[in-house]
Amino acid sequence: MDFQYILNIIPILLKSSLKTLQLTVVSVSVGSLLGIVFALIKLQKNRFLYMIGYLYTWVFRGTPLILQIIFIYYGLPSFGIDLSPMQGALIALSLNSGAYMAEIIRGGITSIDKGQFEAAKALGFTYMQTMRRIILPQTFRVIIAPVGNEFITMLKDTALVSVIAMTELMRTAQTMYAAKFSIEPYMVVAVIYLLLTSVFTTVFSKFERKLSVY
Image (cartoon, rainbow, N blue to C red; front, side, top):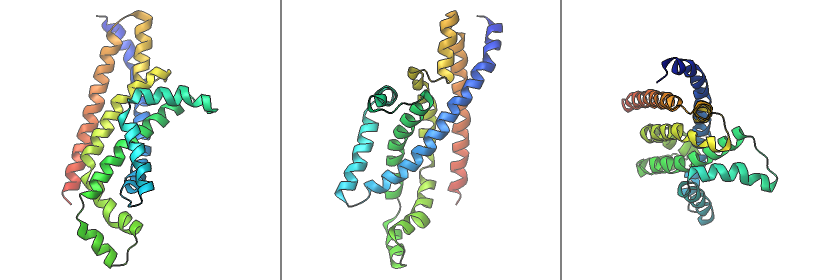
């Protein structure tokens, strides 16, 4: 094992990990917004709206993420939509995250006591006011743990965007391996992923404990 080589590649891989973090944060953030929208859609009594939400979560939860990435990046140009690797990666990851977040948020909303909906209605709140002021703030406290799991999962799943030549942590390691046929880059990447997941697991755990006080 070449320790000097490992020391030389660590800064490069750490720099690439910033791209991995960027992909994760943006995709989960956009996915959360999509999740709220589609969670509310799936809770509607309107059959047409429910089917739209159902089809969205069914497709993106029922097909492999790597297939979604490939279809969006290589398939959309057939419809005249050309994307950069970064754009393709963000769209695919965000849509995938949104499907899972929709189910997480929907589950959180349904866990809130129905009496609070009735009380809000008695006070003259509209449906959206009830959700924005009463239900969603409580839902966010309930879903911290599953949201943390989704974030950690997405952090690892960003490695799949290497199939469209998106230069992030895993793609950088693949390039290094191809240049020297040395396993060291993958070993360093494994350690970086372990450190990142450990840090964010701790952060979400502390956040969850803090909110549980209230």
